[in-house]
Every structure is written in C-alpha cells, then in structure tokens.
Length: 395
Ligand SMILES: C[S@@+](CC[C@H](N)C(=O)[O-])C[C@H]1O[C@@H](n2cnc3c(N)ncnc32)[C@H](O)[C@@H]1O
Image (cartoon, rainbow, N blue to C red):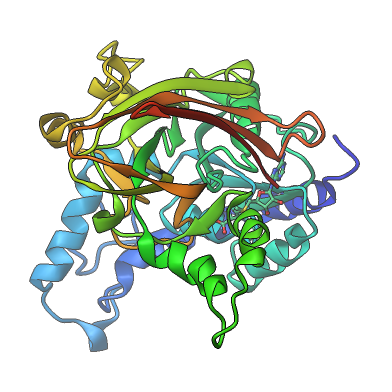
C-alpha cells in the first residue's frame, strides 16, 4: 500500500463494514412509493404470510412511472452495471466518482494527486457515499488498487486535446487495472484542425496601433503581433470563421493507444479554401466519444472513416456523426461552446486566399522536454507561392 493513499486504508475498512447498509439503501429505493416489502415474500401477496410487512396507511396503486421504474430493474443489464468496479483517473472534487456511485457502481476508486483529494473525500462523506467511493490521494502511477476494475472514467482532455494531457495516466490505469473487455469512458477522441479567417480579432489586436487618437503608433505593430500571436490562443470562434472542412490530426483509441505514441504527433494537411478570404491561421478542436469496447473501432476491427482518410468532406462528416450510436462530446466551432473553446494558431500577418486555393503543410505536436505537460507546436505552411514555419509553445 502506498504511503500517499491514506484515504484508501481508512475508507476501505470503513467501507467494508458499511457495505451491507448500502445494499439495503438500494433495496429501499424501491419503497419510495409507500410500500415496504420484505424480499422474503416471493409472490408479493402479503396477507398473513410470514416475513411480509406492508405500510397500510401509504398504500396506493402503482403509477405508470412506478411500473416503468420497476420494469427498468427487470433488465439484467442494470444489475450488471450495479456491481461494477470503477476507477476515476484524476477525480478532482470527486463529482464523476459520485455520479458513478449514484448510477449504482459497487465500488469507485477516486484517484487524484492534488490536494483537492482532501475535499473530494469530504464531498464523498457529505453525500454518504464513503462505503462506495474510496478516495486515493496520490498519482495513478503510484497508488495501489488491489483488484481489477470494470470501468475507467476520466476527464483527461486538455486544450487542443493533448495539451497538459493526462491521457498517459489513463493508459497507465488501463494497463494496471482494467479487466479484459472492460470499459474506458471516454473511449476515443479525435483532434481536428482547419484554416480560419478572423478579421475582427486581427483588427482588435493589431490594427488598433495604426492610429491611436490620431497618433501614428505603427512602430508598435511588430511587438503587438508578437504579443498577440506568438503563442497559441484559447478562444471561441464560430463555424463562420472556418474556411473549409477540418482535417483529422490524430485519432485516439483509448483501448489501444500507447504512451510512446503521444510523445510526438505529426500530420500533413491539405485544404482547399471554400471561399476568398484573409487566412489568419488555423483552429484546433476535438471531440470524444463514449462507447463500449465492442463498438470501439479497433476492437471490432472496423476502422473509423476518419482514421482511414484524414480529410473530411460533407459525406464523411455525415457518416461520422454517430456511427456507433455513441454519445459524442464535441468542442467544434459549430457546436455549443465549452470551457475548452478552440485553440488558435495565428499567423503574424493574414494571407489572402482565393476560393479553391490549396493550403498545405504539416503540423507536429510534441511534448516539451522541459515539461511534459507543455506542448511544442511546429507548423509548416505553404500556399500561393508563400511558405513559412511557425514554432510555438503552449505552456
Ligand atoms: C481536469 S481535472 C478533472 C477533475 C474531475 N475529474 C472533474 O471532472 O471535475 C484533472 C485532475 O486530474 C488530476 N491528475 C492529473 N494527473 C494525475 C495523475 N497522474 N494522477 C492522479 N491525478 C492526476 C489533477 O490533479 C486534476 O485534479
């Protein structure tokens, strides 16, 4: 047992002792309609049978809602879900772990290396879930869990998907504890990029300096461009800023990806602008999908259309919309904004592109040697006889 996971030790003892109570709580859920029936009554006809206890004063016929509720418990799936063991990689305040416990998980290991684990433990206690949720204060790489788990959940996605990414820790958890055939949520992720036009943003940051209250301050322009555009910007844009269909930079299958694959990701892109516009740079965004291993592209050996062909036209997008009926969380410019927004790599100066003009080059995203949570971005660009390289660091 690792010395950092004090809660594990403490909570496990406590949890074992109280586990029966939690089972009773679950049985009690079926009694909210006013009836309390001992499970020894196999047929549900109480009158005089030993072991039957009915609260007469609260009797009422079951409603349609009751029937639907009880019907849902007749399906074997829900009983299977209720005996699952879950690990929450980077639990933070414990909110996802608590959702899992509320959904009926038998046990949830909530792991976080930050001191927020102390609060997570308090939150778990305040919600009377200490018998189910065990907070482990330590790194996923270091803590000990003495059983295999059925499900790994994690909110690991960083800006531009891979920045400050914890995906390596999810891979570690998978390789340490996930049962054969277990579930990883989210199960796969895709990082996209597309050329963008954003004249308002450029004007606000740069054109302002051309004339400030009648004073020519254009000497400020080089510095203003450097300050505004040297590093990647996390901002919200809309679909109207995007010049063409996106390109897939990286598809991540959480069931199979390796830590080595994440050290450096390179892709070549080739776009055809759908309109004449000033090109200000590129936007990056991602989506994640929640699906079981049986519908994971790699596990059922059905490659995703996006993995096969990196460029997306309208028909591919349609196919991609929900190939496996999976739940998708998208951070795309055309979708409702999220706290991830989009990540923009701006050029220092816009480039006029014509409709149908080719925009091509490559991008390499690599973990910084100085700090693996930082990301180096190497962008090569060529179009209309111009080419350049932009290096930036997301820190
Ligand atoms: C983006 S927060 C997610 C918090 C929580 N799951 C939520 O959805 O609110 C990521 C959390 O993962 C934790 N974390 C990152 N790497 C970790 C590691 N290797 N081991 C344990 N915790 C880690 C961080 O301390 C942080 O609390």
